[in-house]
Image (cartoon, rainbow, N blue to C red):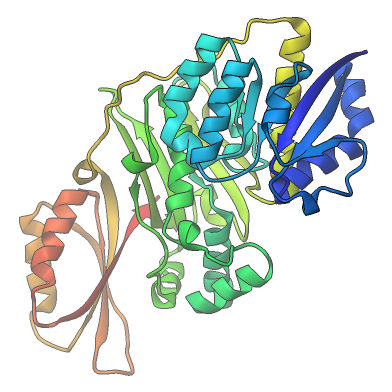
Length: 426
């Protein structure tokens, strides 16, 4: 039986999950592939974490694996971006295939990494970098290879989706929902990158790059987080048949311009993304021949992510054994990109204004919106036990520039005590 030997670098939560999966399902994988996949080395700076692992060689020096000619695949599960990029380049020089779950690295360096892998005739596996256990990279790479992808919209951060679900379903305030997520292990001790949209932006940059063949980086993603979301608006959204979600969205127009954005949005209950709850992720893909398809599953955690990593191990292993050319052609990315500027993005909008009881308020706001080419779809005035009364507007579709220019004027009115807005996804 043919063997493929791997080195696992980084033995945290995901590394442990990969080791468990390859050991517990070893016979199953061998039966299905005819290949004996072996972890020869586990390498981690903290030897105390790996000193009791049997049947593998342990080290705190990654060069041990790179110098071993038996190692064909290196699995990077370290985190950060500087060392993993160094490791990637050394793997290419050493003739090793490279697997990573590192969305931060890929969202900065994907173009350069593809170019280097192509030069060295080596393969990069990165299924685990986006949405954990949802095989979205493989879907774009194989199932949709004959389709032009038109848009990708999804919930790709489980932490924020858990928090927003608890706020919506249990009427928990933001901080209480966050604390509950941390207690259950769905949020890190420092959840900043989840809450500010940065984690989702990294994942979306990777997805948009391979879907639209453009060199899109995290910094290109128009990003807003959920830190300032209030329970009031989540409850109003439900009254109007919307659910607040952190949505990652990318699409391409006929001219080849791509929009990439991560924002909290009010999602219509008719949209299947509105029903995705708790820590689960889901991605909607629109393609020219297939139409719309939806992918759902756990977006994080040791075993869902490990499943994605192992799928890359098996995929590369099959290529090694069959001696196929390691063709990354499907993932070739143009060095260039054509991005829609944030001002060009279009949405319907929800706007809540806290105001005192004064005559002519609706007329003044309506005039400002109208002067900027924005038409009002609906107005709701809610009862209040305080002197300030909430007035809620829903607009028809407008550009970001039209809406933001309107807000600059509306915020100057002395009767506006507070203004909150959301974009709407139907």
